[in-house]
Amino acid sequence: MNIKITASYDGTTYCGWQIQPNGITVQETLENAIFKAFNQTVKITGSGRTDSGVHARGQVASFSLDSSIPPEKICKAVNAYLPNDIRVLDSQAVDQDFNALRSAKKKTYSYSFYIAPVEQPLKERYALNLDRLPDIALMKKCADLFVGEHDFKCFNASGGSAKTTVRTVYSIEIELAGGDLVIFVTGNGFLYNMVRTMAGTILAVGNKEKDLETVKTMLKTGDRNLCGRTLPAKGLCLEKVFYQ
Amino acid sequence: MNIKITASYDGTTYCGWQIQPNGITVQETLENAIFKAFNQTVKITGSGRTDSGVHARGQVASFSLDSSIPPEKICKAVNAYLPNDIRVLDSQAVDQDFNALRSAKKKTYSYSFYIAPVEQPLKERYALNLDRLPDIALMKKCADLFVGEHDFKCFNASGGSAKTTVRTVYSIEIELAGGDLVIFVTGNGFLYNMVRTMAGTILAVGNKEKDLETVKTMLKTGDRNLCGRTLPAKGLCLEKVFYQ
Image: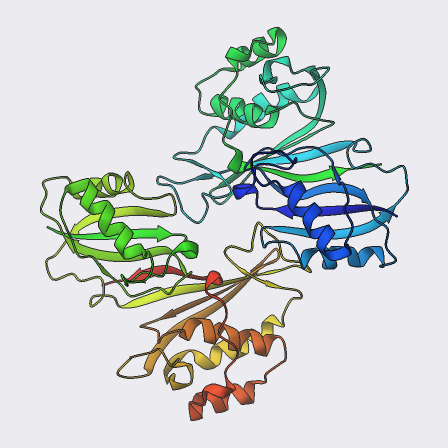
């Protein structure tokens, strides 16, 4: 049967989602747990890669499993063999043509900050410290420039291998609660490092280190030198993947 | 000069606050950082120990330092030599007779839970997973039994060395926000493991595994067998220490 799982992980100690020779990845850890639970070697397909140190609350993956176990019980069976920092939250049987990567319609990522004069050890793992509150209204104006279909060539990091740099951003929400500031970005796909550099650009505008005209020029010309910095992985989290 | 610092730490990888031969402690890590910053061997006194794996948002410590640095700049100097999971949030000069342990009047600890059918990797480090919401009204009724001056002999774990088991609990607040449930306990002092066992007892009542009459008997007789379980360290956090 074709299985769809939703997984959450603390990416701090992983070399990202996708299997690679030098370092432990989330995909590999999941495949090993599935092997231990079902004595079957499976190859799982994620909705996309997450980079080293990036977290997920709702990564989706699919794989083919030969078993008579009720599909909704697969998550529990696999969790028994996973370390604490990865959990399968849900498992279900899906149509044979479902593929977590190819069937994905859109994704939401979050980038989290917290405002405090000194780093807070109990927040550092999942968010980036800002010593003062940026101008949220300016951040929202900057974010609005990215919404819609654009050629995001300016965000195309050197490691990227995308055929086209045109993507559609459906929405960018900026939420401030207590001292926590979160940017939620929903789009049909993202270039390598795109969300981290986009968040860095929105932050630079909020900090008045960059003005909106520069961002417009950056989008128009695709000049990567005009972008804000690529923010560290730890603040980034894959929140949700949307299908049909 | 006599210095008072307020520190926060992620206790996950530490063998608690107090220096001990087998394992790295928060106190030792702070003393090493102070040595590196000021080339002085100091002995710092904490407001009290926190156990292995317990976190702090507002631990207080005092020590004597021979330096002409403005006291409020000590935190920054020390932070430069601390790992990310410990930060000095504040430093100030205090009267010579101030002692972080002896001068402490009361403390607030929190114990955090989160409600979810499966463990959430992004919450697991700082809170205990509950698969369903306990009865909050019952939890509050149980908590009320602990408020006031009582002989908390029932909570006196075998590792404890207190001269008297009488303590005053000033307040217990139970807050539910989203899926996060937090118990805040403020008292003039706590026995070894007292907050964790008290939280475990309140939880057992909320889960209807224990009734209020049993808790009353437990308090009256000091029978430790009637307590709830001692909850794991990771959900416990020293929030604040109060002085004059």
